[in-house]
Amino acid sequence: MLRMFREHRIRPVRPLDGRWEFVTAPERTRRTGLPRRYARRIAVPSCWEMIPGLETYRGKAWFRTTVRSLPGRALRIAFGGVSHTAAVFLDGRRIAAHHDAYTSWDAIAAPPGPGVHELVVEVDNGFGAQSALHMENDYYTYGGITRPVEAQAIPAVFIERIAAVPRHDRSGWALDVRARVRNLGRAPARRMLRIAVAGGMLELGLAVPAGGSRDVAGRLARLNVLPWEPGRPRLYPLVARLLERGRPVDDLIDRVGFRTIGTRGPRLLLNGRSIRLRGFNRHEDHPAHGCALPVSAMKRDLAILRDLGANFIRTSHYPNDTRFLDLCDEQGFLVWEESHARSVSFAHPLFRRQSGASAREMVASHVNRPSIIIWGCLNECDTKTPSGRREHARLLGLLRSLDGSRPVTYAANHAQGDRCHDLADLVSWNRYDAWYGGAPERIAPALAGMLRWLKTRPGPVRHRPVIMSEFGGAALRGVHRPYRARWSEEYQAEILAESLRIYLNHPRLCGAAIWQFCDVRVTPGWWGNRPRLMNNKGVVDEWRRPKRSYAVVKRMFRAAARRR
Ligand code: ADA
Image (cartoon, rainbow, N blue to C red; front, top):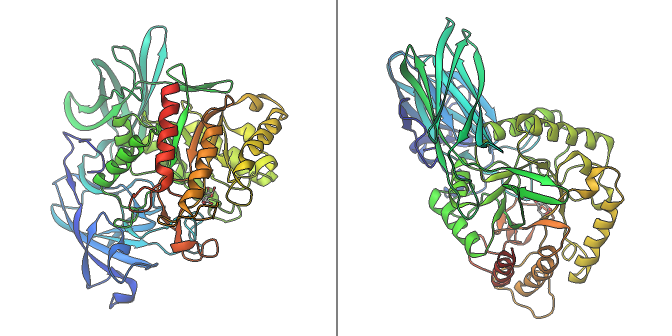
């Protein structure tokens, strides 16, 4: 299942998770076209790096299974995520392609005729000119069908998506709904879209052109609901049904939470009240699963984050598995979700297209998640030059145009050289004052200097909320030294203790996210080969075993939570 609950009760859905046939490029016997023979089987979802011999395989591979179609129905193959470039073939015919590991997408085939069909997915995790965002980096780009897959039997006219944004005013809670209905058929179609939430109902008539789609919008007002809050994350089902002459022919079910998020001066306001964020940057990474974490592992991560006293997660540096966000919705975590890009070059010819697609697909699939309170983009990219400013304006503007209900930001590492903060709603700083040079004593003066500089900026940016979006230091679990030795658990604990002492209490800050939750794999060669080929700044190691800093962070996060 792509989600933590059923999205369809009318539309027939079959999960395609399970064993698929699999062959890598060096193993295949035929050089052109699709493979004839498949060497082995592989679990979907998974990362192929988990198979002995393929731990570092980078290149192409093919996955094959079968799907059954229903008479007269088109086939929609819904992918939660494929890492990172994919082409889809149904009975040998190419029906779709997609780039980027971290967003969901689909492949639709006109009614393929009744019976069983061959489905082949060609996957490439290679680095090269075809990818502006997937490259050697401080996290690992795995290979495979890494998130769930479903086969859906859709009617010619079907519900493609629904965006629901909660509003609150004097008359109470309302929900602004925008839906897209698509027509794969050759004739225009009339339908009724019925949307029900929390006892309220909206009916929207629509004419959908042949081979096109129609967007409709409406408002469900005066809803009798209670707000979504971290301590009481109440969720309500939203049920959309498509009716043809009064008869339901398709549906889409989601869950919504009623909350507002915004800023006032230096404050971040959730449901009109000032909140402070204390949490972690988290990569989707695990030594037993790669980036394809099963729900049990996601739940365990959230249980650890809860134990640490965190209320906030930044999905560095890409959109996350929707099931993880569903869990955040259910458990009341606050999330900064970020489109894909970590320190990338704007000069790459595909940068604009691929960064735009990541942002668009992220918002389209996750706009209804109440846990997401911030949209982010472009971690540590060029913010110093006019062309850097242009790209930040473009992507932040795109995020705002896709969803104006959440603040937007980017995590900056150019200190006082940054020229883009005024383009965002939140100022977010990545600081490693005690790790890349410096010492814990540098943390307080460095922040004071940054805040003084911010005050000199022209316009409203100088009053905007500030988040410390990354800070920390590395520790190799088991390495103990008493004297501030790099890589020791003691030194990491000291860096984090001093950072949190300043950041959690500072009146000018509204959030702090430690880099990072757990140790993660990086591309070999990165940063002149990091120890163990891992980024070791986790408070837990890759197996989620605590380092000495765990107890320090837990004590300080919990004390901060009590102060609110
Ligand atoms: C950066 C970056 C992270 C990670 C971190 C580090 O701030 O955003 O992805 O690389 O530094 O560990 O140095």
